[in-house]
Length: 229
Image 1 (cartoon, rainbow, N blue to C red):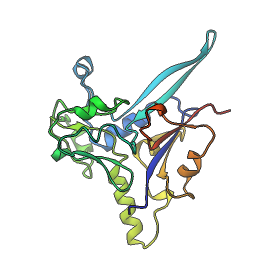
Image 2: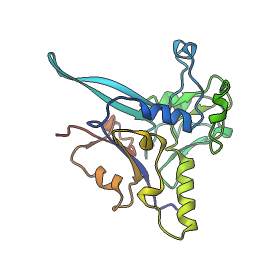
Image 3: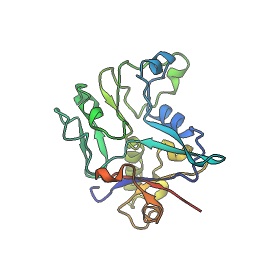
Image 4: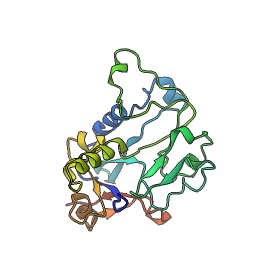
């Protein structure tokens, strides 16, 4: 399975800032519920966030929205600073987080230029009936570990297992992350960047393709499409 490189393309021109991706990610990955106190203490956790910025000058201004998540960098600054190898790059291009190995030094969060890693200050609590919506395919993390987007690795594994059982290659239809599935504007596309026939690989070749903080040389696996007509 090492011949794959999972990646994502996000079309900024299509994003409306509805934050359906944020809610879907929160539910799919058993992310703790953020209470008002967590926000006030700057301890809220959201694996994907939607930022707003303004384009143009008054009175001809336009609001733009950009979803930001772990960029799964090929040259990830977070990986070499972890003293216990709790985060590393696997053979499928994912920046992996091993929760039961993490000791919570937070070095990785300090070294991430995208601020997409979060320290879990509190053990997750889901008051009834929200406890019944927890995803059994995703672990409920204890307090004291780092969290971040995994590209819904549980869905990747499920899609690969299904294709293997049917003795065929993985296709675009086999795997969708929670954020890409929930986006009503279809602004998020996920797939194998190494497969030239995949939709995500073809979109990544667009003249509109760009990376966040490209000058840092982190080589992210998330590509943004900017400046569409």
